Image (cartoon, rainbow, N blue to C red):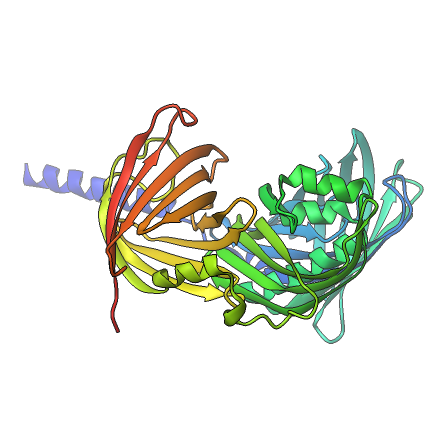
Length: 471
C-alpha cells in the first residue's frame, strides 16, 4: 500500500513539474532585445516627394517608441507638426520579431485611414523593408531602407512607392535623430512656439492638434469661443498675423496640467480691424495619452506704456482677493457624486492643502490644491476679473482631465461660484459653491452642489471647512 502511494505521489510530482515547465513564460530573444535600442524619442525632418499620394511638402515631427508585451514588441507613435509622408498628422505602429526567419514585422495605422504592413531585416547599419500600403481604398507597394549615420546620432530613411510593383518612384526622405527626452516644461515651451509659427502661416491643422476639442477660448474683447469658432477665423482668413514674437515666455507644470504665460507682440488684423499690439496671455494645458493639449486660453491687451505693470496698478477688485493669499488646510465629507464621471472619486472624508498667490503682476490669482485623502487629486485654478460683467472668472483643471469655467461674486464675507464642469468623458455638469469666511478671513465653510439635469434640480456633492496656516 505504501509503495503504491509513493508511486502515485511520484507520478503526480513529475506531472506537476512538467506542467510548470510547459507554462513557464518565454523570454525575449536577442532579436527582440535589439528593438529596445529603437525606443525613446526621435525628431523627424525631411521631405515628401510628389507622388500619387499628394503634392511635395516638408516633413517635421517626432516619433516616440516604448516596449510593450513584456519586451516582445514595441509601440511607436508619430506626431507631425504638419503632415507626414502620406498626408497623415499622427499614426501608431507595432513592431515585432520572428526568430525563426530573423525578420521584423510592423503594422502601421494613421489618422487618415491609411494602413500598411511590412517585413524588414537588419544587417549591420542598414534596415531594409518592403510591404504594402492601403490608402483611400487603393493598394500600393512600398520599399525602402534606414541607414545609420556614421556618428550614431540617428539614421536616414528613404522610401519608394509603386502602383504595380514594377515601376518605382521615390516618395520620401527623412532624417531621424535621437533626442534627449525633454522635460514637460521644455515641451510646453516648444509647443508655444509651434502654435505661434502655425498662426503666422495660417496653418489651422497644426493649431487644431494643439487645441483640445473642449477648448475654452477667451478673447481680449471678452468673448468666449469654442475650438471650432476660433479655428474658423484662421481658416477663413478673417484673422491674419504678419508678425508675432514672445516676451517673458514661461511654463509651469503640475502633474498632468501645465500653464504657459507671457507677452506676445503682434502685427495682426481681424477682418477690417487692426488688432496689433502687445497681449498678455495665459494658456492652460492638460496631458492626455502622453500628449499636451491646450484646454483654455485667455489674452488681455497691454495698454501702451504699461508693459511693466506693478502690483500698485492692480485693479481694486483683484486687490480684494488679497485675503485669500497664503497656505490653507481643509477637510470635509463628500457624498456620492450626483453625476457619474465627476472628479475626486467616491463618497468619503477628504483632506488636503491649498496654496493661493498672485501671478502675472497681480492680474490673476492662482490657486493650487492637493487632496491627501481619500485619493490623490491635484488641481489648479486661475482667477481674473471681468470689469464689464463685474464678476470674477475662474478657469480650473484637475489631474483626472476634468476642467471647469466659472464666474464668482464676493459680497462681504460670502463668495458664490457658478460653474460648468466638463468631466474627462466630455460631459458638462452645472456646479455651484457657497463659501462663508470668518470675520478675520482665517477660516471658512463651504457647500458644493451639482445638478444632474442641467440646473433643474441640485444635489449636495460635498461640505468642506478650512483654515489659513499661520507661519
